[in-house]
Image (cartoon, rainbow, N blue to C red; front, side):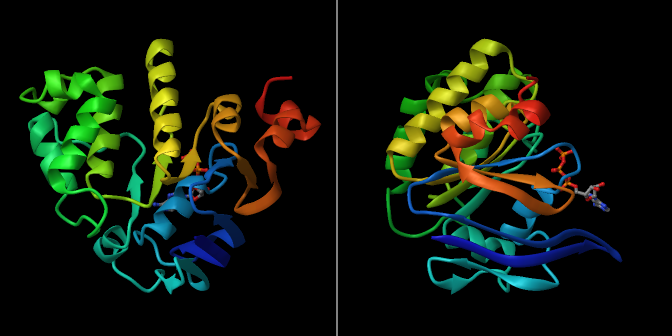
Length: 235
Ligand code: ATP
């Protein structure tokens, strides 16, 4: 469904992604693992059109998206939930949910069905609907960021470090939400510092080092891989 072939990405003259290929199948959860600076965020930004690869291609559902503008990519159903959430502290929960729908993909659930779906998944957002985003807890803000992304009606959702800064109980809720989304058939590309959690949620994973894929396999195999254990699982 999402097919990235041999992309090269630069910041100015500095090349940080050196020919990276990866794919996400329909309804699949795929994780991208790697230490700080490996290029995970850069890869997600390239897919969502915030950065433009200098070579290679990104195809979604048979169409090149690496030549499209970010809003067109969203309208095709590829949506990124950015690291650090990027909410507007003075805007309410409801306003964020409305914002998420502005460039939504057509088809799928209607606007009101999406709102109901989000409230069912994250009841706290219904309870706090009039509250300003800046006054929510870290976990609630993360839920709101995901809810905003879901309002765009995605077929492929990219989550960048969703568990960052969350208390353990919130991490459990987040994991439940990701499982829930997987069951609805949305494809997920997950970047996550908590590698064990990511590999338990995903079916497949890629290990990135300094802008290259060094390992790719089924998630259960990566969990048992001695190189992954040594580098990312504290074994
Ligand atoms: P992290 O978990 O720290 O976000 P990451 O794997 O997501 O790591 P990237 O943020 O994609 O890594 O960064 C990849 C490389 O690109 C790093 O060497 C980083 O210093 C560099 N880089 C990231 N953003 C920029 C930028 N705006 N300008 C120049 N270089 C950048």
